[in-house]
Image (cartoon, rainbow, N blue to C red; front, side, top):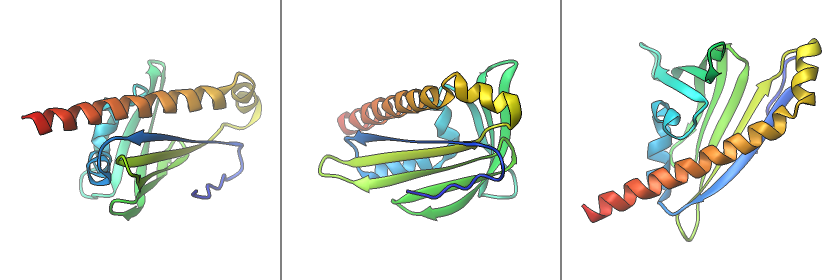
Length: 160
């Protein structure tokens, strides 16, 4: 598991996994283009590659106005068919990694996300309302949505 380091504020980190009945190649290929992420993560509204740099991505995420935040992330490590890691370079401080493991049935995908929480009373409030549990549940639901979508797409392609 990746080691995420917080600067000075509390950090919220969660990992979730899903077994997918598709090959590692199919799962990796869909994740490699981060513009696909909003298809299965409802909180992610938009992800676009930043012009002029194939490793920079601009993210818009949230529940809707006024609860929307933006950031730019850089792909920090890419091991084809194994791992894609990123780190924010502006906006909301966060890090993440998607890891791909071959299984007998296809692929196990592990997604780990870490966010620096705001300091002070806002950070304490977010911790007290159970933001960590909410994030874990949301990520698990998103990965289940991903599994459903990719398995259906691969099935459609194999029938066509």
